[in-house]
Image 1: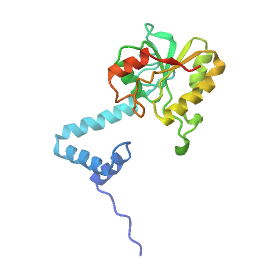
Image 2: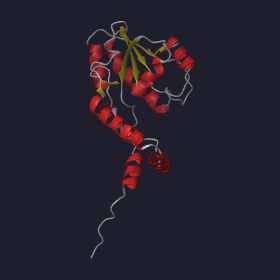
Image 3: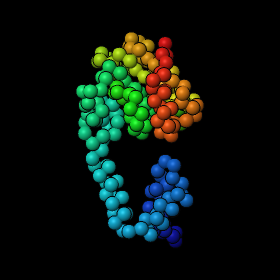
Image 4: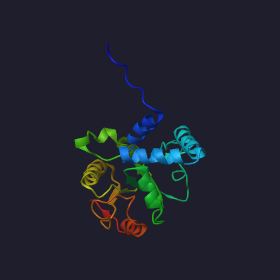
Amino acid sequence: MSESPRRLSAMDRLVERLCRLPGIGRRSAQRIVYHLLQSDPQEATELAEAIRAFRVNLRACSQCGNVTESDPCPLCDDPRRDHATLLVVEQPGDITALETTGQYRGLYHVLMGRLSPLDGVGPGDLNIDALLQRIDQGRIKEVILGTHPTSEGDGTALYLVQQLTRTGVKVTRLARGLPTGATLDIVSKAVLGDAIQGRQAMR
């Protein structure tokens, strides 16, 4: 007679769920669980409520793909921003990093990733069709490529240049003031500001 599968404890289930998050291994997950166990029960309740509210209230902006509670997002809906300039980034977190510089006043477009053939991520997996549709509307005059200065980010930028050539828009890329191999969310505001001001034409 075969044994029935062991029922996981509440702690093991939480550790298992936390391990599914990017950047959190089993040890990190266990530290988080022990912290919640030793803290005020209200802290765990507030964390659970914040996660629930995140899933219920947040959505992707129908125009740029940024995470937002309203659609369109406040950046796309701001008439004071330059609606003729579009900065293409990989993830919503990149927008947060760039906004801290105070150097950019245009709009954004989030790809939700980058091309990575080894991981099976192709053009159809990114928010590229929506980007081309925005440009086809005729309001965009310049597209700034803000992909990370990595091999995959460079490959994504090259692919986008090929796709954007037919549109007639000006295509630039953030200057190489950004250190190779770095991601936008870890470099300083000064470096990001210089990169925006010193962007270079791609063609």
